Length: 290
Image (cartoon, rainbow, N blue to C red):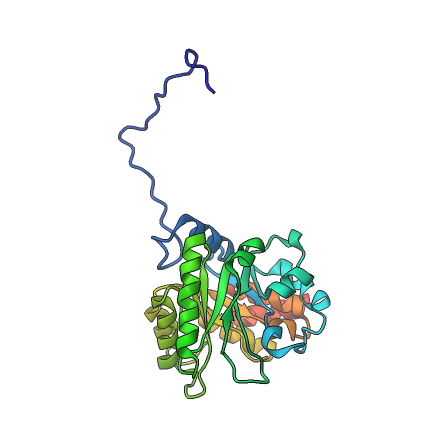
């Protein structure tokens, strides 16, 4: 307690000086809660406005995928170069050092594997997400599939829980069997995620009209890495996506299945954060791999 008689009277009220405003750097989140903004500011770099996410949650669907057989050997050395890691709670507890101090995009829905029909999923316990200090809750949304309504419901429930506890929701668009990865579908799927409460969206890149997908989505979009490509091609499509408005990438196989994963993730960072051209980034990759 301050002493009543010795407490100095307040005098510097800044009369006549307007209150400083600090607009938030990510689109669509100006009116989000402080906790949401704090977590998003750790996932996304405030200087570049972008993020390099490292996805290695493939095992919850596919088991020991190539490059993920021993995650302690292949993934752990990559973590320091990622802005955010996207993984399951099992992998997190098993192989991610708590001292890495990286924001976690936690795979928050699960339920089926490649051996059965996909996307019949349920949600994890929000208390466990809080327990592992998740910075985002990642939910699969299967627009155009048999389980569309269920996965949208999962997104809505997650967004409600996220709003309660200040944790962003990442809507991850899956491709329905009847639809293709074109502008019309990706714009629809991304917009549905945002309209139902996703704080940001992970979707695929399309070579034609991707800027329309980004423009139609009122929250940030990060692109999925997709299937393994030659390193120069992966850097090319990452660069194109950033140039057309994506706020980052969430790459998995194009990093951990690379011949030189540590060099590859640093080359990706050069594209996403430093505005390096694909050629410059590929030259960096070739230099680092030596």
